[in-house]
Amino acid sequence: MFFSLIIPVFNRPDEIDELLESLSVSDFNKDFEIVVIEDGSTIPCKHIVDAYQNKLNITYFFKPNSGPGDSRNFGMRHAKGDYFIIFDSDCIIPKQYLTEVSKALKANYVDCFGGPDKALDSFSDVQKAINFAMTSFLTTGGIRGGSEKIDKFQPRSFNMGISKKAFEESQGFGNIHPGEDPDLSIRLWNIGFETRLFPLAYVYHKRRIDWSKFYKQVNKFGKARPILNTWYPKYNKLTFFFPTVFLLGFIVSTIILLLGFPFLIYAYGLYFLLLFITSTASNKSLKIGILSVIALLIQFYGYGIGFLKSFILVQILKRKPQEVFPELFFKN
View 1 (cartoon, rainbow, N blue to C red):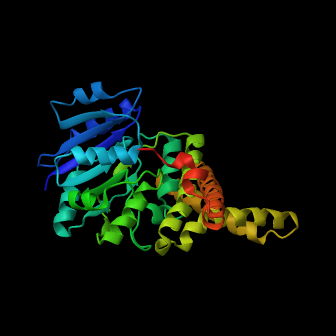
View 2 (cartoon, rainbow, N blue to C red):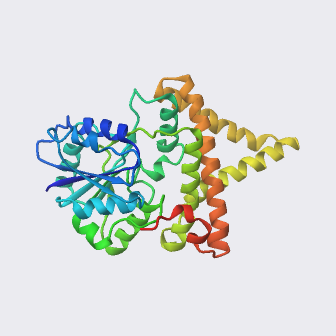
């Protein structure tokens, strides 16, 4: 089995440098190739890629901007491998990653897998807090990428593997973003392919975003989910409503508190306290514990508002997603 590592990049040469440096010290004892796809960047990374030509088997392509999904498809069409592994440019790869993937595929082959993400000690406190909010079992982490206990596992494209056969039969990613990875997972299931979590195949996901960018990101996640629920009603689940219900419940609890009934707000207070204690303990930092609560509030508010708006417009009023949310669709 020959691995092709597919890495789209847009205006982030520093990230590619860190990612390629981490791959250059991989302990994998077989050859693999890296395909970097520059997605119409105005700040190109070719000079970074060229610096690793003597260390890695690496190919560089520049193409007009068409979004990460189409860029991944471009890379897979030009790759030589029979199994593709996809990374976001803001990932750092542990040296044992490819070895763990190879072991997992040999033990129990699957045509599509996903791995979890973790935070390095060198990450900023905000990055660690956002990582906790995105991955913790107390938030949406168990659903989105750290567990396969809840229904079928949907790999995320920052750390995802797919066989050449599965790519060719599915035609890869669609033009929605975000949401292109669950869309691909569902289409793979419908064709007959399986997906699985490889818990030891984790990456360090740096997420170079501030609070404002984080809000915009999770707000788009919220908008995308009702669209996917419309396309694939069979896979609609009540858990997708949780952030919106959480948000509406918090508003109702606050109103009831003003009327002299504090009991519901106590439940929210206990939840925030549990989140704070868990994050503080796992990160060994009171500051990150506090920032994790802030990250959770931004995550649930941004996702909840986006989901509610999309649910009303797309699922109730039957508006076309491409018309009401053009920012979620790339034109290939």
